[in-house]
Length: 282
Image 1: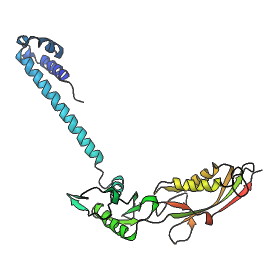
Image 2 (image 1 turned 90 degrees about the vertical axis):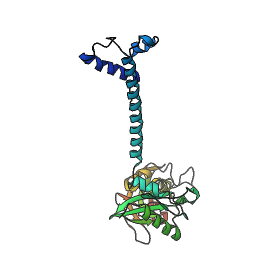
Image 3 (image 1 turned 120 degrees about the vertical axis):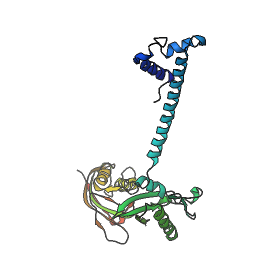
Image 4 (image 1 turned 90 degrees about the horizontal axis):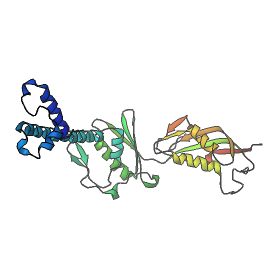
């Protein structure tokens, strides 16, 4: 923080007083407050004091300029994230379908910003075997059409750091199925898993769907958290995991590890492939 002119003047006076060769300058005792008082009678103010004030004022001005410069540099450095994952995600979301990407100095940019053509609404970036992998979706978790994906592949190849290979994934959800034994409270829940008070509500299925929906794009599926979610459902006394598996594309189901990031970046629960066995807790 820049010092005031008064503070700088007082520091200069302190330095002046330490120089014995300057003892002849009068008044012998001086500070900024005394100088400002004496200015009411300009003829009584020695020239050296005025010059010292001008030096103090100049010093304060320079300090303010350096402080502003330092703040500007700090801001620039804070925003200088070229090549980092947050930067790549930010740039990935700027894709504009149908617009030419122009070279702008050492990088690329669009001539105009057209939000209507920015079709990518979710973007995640990670590195797999030295390849930058962009996972992307449009609104409502829709995947890119073939022509859109081709354009996006060219786009990310241009914005990525030189020498880095890229790939684009825009795919339907990975699928999760789960088998559980659920011990339930027969005062609250029916043997079908529906609530006695509202047979249209199935708390366990809702809990599973809500947990899967709560996972952020490219976030981790955690089997322990799935069990925790079921445990919190109305009427559930004790859920016992028997099987949790996943698959993507046309592949077969495989055991779900303790945690896993979806190949596509998102999941859906397949109730038709799952078995929930309800056992009354008595």
